[in-house]
Structures are given as structure tokens and as C-alpha cells.
Length: 153
Image (tube, rainbow, N blue to C red; front, side, top):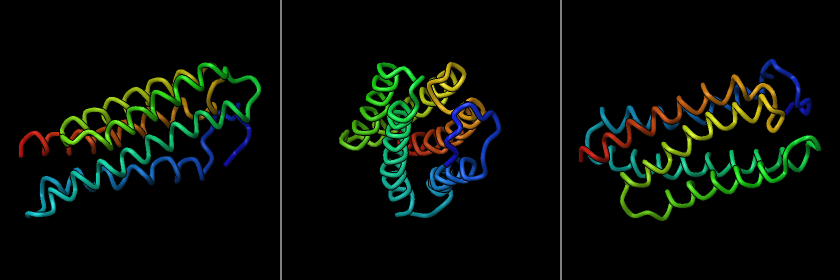
């Protein structure tokens, strides 16, 4: 990845590694509504696992940035990372799929907002200001489709 934290344009690997992991969430959301049984069940449960893994990864990215970039606010990076990781972990242990998906939608929307803000203040790579809202709201849309299916079942 690009190590220039002030670079405003998104590097190609940032786009690929940012948007690529959102595609399974969108596919799961579509599959949960369009595929015959038992696929909706699997789409919801695998979507929860994938969504939580990605949110935990994003927590690590934020904390890693705090380690590697001296200007980043260490307390802010730690608090943000813990928040994202906690929501991801709760999604994995909450037995009710609708509650797990609610945790993930909340985490993705928070990350979209907080990572954009962090990028503008120097606590995340500058290009996150444009990447994170788009990237994570795409993922949140897939998770919301799964949530709708889980509630409707």
C-alpha cells in the first residue's frame, strides 16, 4: 500500500482492496432475497462472518496507521480501533442474526463517517476521505439487505 499518508488521490491497490471486499456483502444481500432455500440462510450467516472479519480488519488498519504515522493521535486511533473491533466481535457472538447485522450496519456506517473525519484531520490516510464513505456504505447496503431478510424470515 502507499505509505504517503498525505496523498489525496486513491492508489490502485487502495481501490481494489477497498471495494473488492464489499462485493461479497452485496452478493450476499442480493442472494438472500433472490435465491431459493436454503441459500438465504447461508447468505445471512456467511454475510455476518464476512462483514465482521472486514470490520475487524478495518480496526487493525486504523490502529496500524497510528503505529506507523507519528502525527496520528494514538488515543484516537486506539479508541476507534477498539470500537470497530468490539462491534465486529459482538456480531460474531450474538445469536440472533438480526442483532448481529444491526451491529455490523452500525459499525460500517460509523467507520464511513469516522474514517473520513480521521483522514481530513491526519489520523488516517488522506485518500480515506473519499474511499471510506463510498466503500463502507456499499458494504452497509449489502448488510442492510441481509438485515431486511433476517427480519423478514
